[in-house]
Amino acid sequence: MSFINNNWWFLPLIVTIFSGILCPAMGTVLITHKRLLQVNLISHCVLPGLALAYAFGVNPSIGGVVSGLLGSVVAESLTNRKSENYEAVMNTILAGMLGFGVILIPLLGIRIDLETVLFGDLFVANFEDLLETIIAFSVFMLLMAFGYEKVVYVGLDPEGASASGINVSFLNLALSFTTSLVIVSSMSAVGVILVIALLSSPTLLGLDKAQSLRIAMIRSSLFGLCISLLGFILSLLFNLSPGPAISVICVATLLIPKFRK
Amino acid sequence: MATLVAENLTFAYTKKSKPVLNKVSVEIKPGTLTALVGPNGAGKSTLLRILQGQNTPDKGEIKIDDENLYRSRSLVALMPQRSSMNWKFPITVEKLVSLGQIKYSKSRSKNPFQIKALLAYPNSWINKCCELEATMQRVGIANLANRRLDSLSGGQQQRALLAKTLMSPAKIFLLDEPCAALDPPAKEDFLKIVRQLADAGLSLLVSSHDWGKSLNNYDQVIVLDKSVLAVGSPDQIKDQLEEINISSIKENNSCD
Image (cartoon, rainbow over all chains, first blue to last red):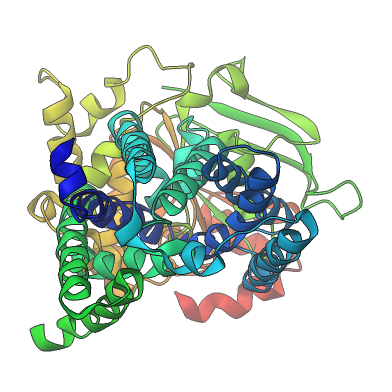
């Protein structure tokens, strides 16, 4: 314990490692399922839940997860991916939910550091943040341990998966729940908005020529870990904000495939 | 061996919409290759989904060997249209084909390997491993087992999808426009494979836009445009074609 107290960077480093591994692994599943817009939606939908949870004395992360999941369920009930208005409806809901959250904060008379929620503040991560990240990590690992084959089948052939007896709606709900957990748990590291970069860019590198979803997830996680650690170190060295630094490095990694060619 | 009989199937997607299918009756006999042809919007895919049990008809009934379809759903397998597949998914051909063995529903066929035994090694001991290999060999993709799905040509992808469908414990196979977007040699190749499968004792119903020489590969042709316009052998159907109004099909002759 005294080691942690004497080395303030230790807890943020562990949170960085977990988030760096978890977010790209989750992102790989979501990209292969063509559900990345859902990430955007959920990340914008957590704010009203956070505000309400603060106001009623509940753990804000629980409020965030419920709110994110609710936004996702509402969006899926209003539209579906085959609909031509899918993107318009999704974007309207995500903007509306973010706006609703911003309205709630003064209405409920609470104080939330919006900048920290949206863009993270890794260097002040505490045990609670670490615990949330470990819970999200565990839920994701459980999903993969017991549902990997179903996740593969639904991502590849949703109709065939449904015909073979898989409850596709339930699996999608489980994915939305896990996504909400991952986003909220990454709040301290990169914030609920910048987490989108960590969910996406390492995945693009990991997916390239991967022979299976499992291999793609492992490779994405390794890339994500490198990106997160690099962002963490650069932030320490140059006194930068870690969340935005990690996001900028994510953007830079988009150039890697160009150099490979 | 199993016979599928569907009688007077009527189906509309919503109560207010016009029926997509109106009093459609079909019979798929064991060991036959049947073509289901009709224009776009004729209800071919809807009929296949109903015959597979994914959609429930508003009226009519489906029986397999005199037993209700919903009690023996696992006896019917559907190969979906190309467009419903995520071809970019990171998966090898072998893994894709093995997914066909997975059944999460409670109604399992008692003898899942019976049909596959007919495919290539009728007298051999069949286990899951050699069944996978035999099925891939049968459709000519054994040498592609470790290739990623998105590295294959369209024809190879369709053969991989057919192999996956054949891995299911079904006895009747419904193929939804398997030749769509295939070039003529790939199409011919694919039809040769399904012909061989029917000759080996499988029952196949193949939906298609094509209306031409390729119909000669089939034992039976069903012409559908919301309702069944004609049923018979390819020669009988070509004779009847002049009498029935299916101009949109005739226009598609050039596809073949």
